[in-house]
Amino acid sequence: MLDGIQTRDGRWLTVEEYGDRDGTPVVLLHGTPGCRSGVVPEDVVKAHPWVRFIAYDRPGYADSDRHPGRRVADAARDVADLADALGLERFSVLGRSGGAPHALACAALMPARVRRAAALVSLAPPDAEGLSWFDGMAASNVEDYTLALTDTLAFAERLASRAAAVRQDPAQLLVTIRDGLTDADRRIVSQPAVGDMLLRNYREALRTSAYGWLDDALALLSHWGFDPAAITRPVLLWHGAQDRFSPVGHFEWLLGRVPRARPVLDPDTGHFGAIEALPAVLDWLCPAS
Image (cartoon, rainbow, N blue to C red; front, side, top):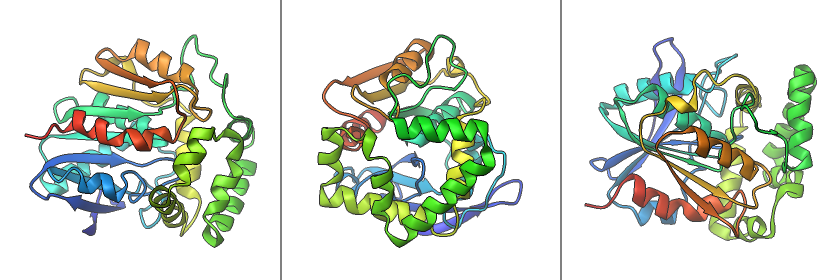
């Protein structure tokens, strides 16, 4: 069911629910760029009929109003507004890729409401002490992030151009990041169900503008607004050891920082291996009764 909510500061967020309306609620935090439809494939949803899936478009994506200057921590306020609108007292959160830090924000800033959190292939904060942030990262990501840090206007223009190309052909996004795709990633994204989900996700995310993509990147590269060490809820950290978009050093840094982290490191996969890990992750977040 597609709907929307208004946040406390008056912004509109597009929200979609699927699965069991009376099931265990899980709020999904999509990747970057991404939207509500790009987190959990349909076959995984069907295999978890006891789960109530709730996904929303972060500000600036698709039809959700933009929130310029937002920080990662602001996702917790939006998720709280969403949960209030849906009458959810407690829930779990699941974030993949660019959504993973936002899931960690919810766990850190809403300890009374978040039961468990799963952060899959997450980046670490840009000010992570002792971490060489770019080590092991694909050249395309290093170039983009460096431009974002040194010339925001040029970075915004680059993303606007890419977004226009993606609206014409969503597969262009995968072309621009091909240097970071491992053999395992290529196998996964070539699967029809996964490939179709990702292409629909990219097209919808960037249908109106590239603002969500821009604001996500700038938020991830700025102070997150919370310390992962402050998280008191159980957290599952899942990572592929071959990941070149969120290098394994980021996982190791978070593992040493998040107090109740449960680590899962797959030695044989990369960034998109997180999609194949979703069934087991959901089983941990929402055990079948």
